[in-house]
Length: 83
Ligand SMILES: [Zn+2]
Image (tube, rainbow, N blue to C red; front, side, top):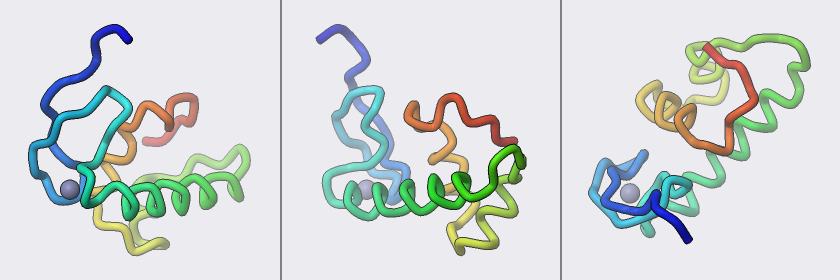
């Protein structure tokens, strides 16, 4: 357990919460956030070798751009090149 935890802003509601660098959403939004993240991951999974822009993902999945940008900061998305 080293570093990385502190006060963060929730990716969905913007409220401050205490979490680690891997926590992106507050307790209230966590479930919803995970579903969104899984949705986006699955979307990307079906596009091998194709670079989907976040605008396109946002439009196709109906995820607001603001949330898409937060999703892309999620350390779990590392390794996927999305611009
Ligand atoms: Zn929240």
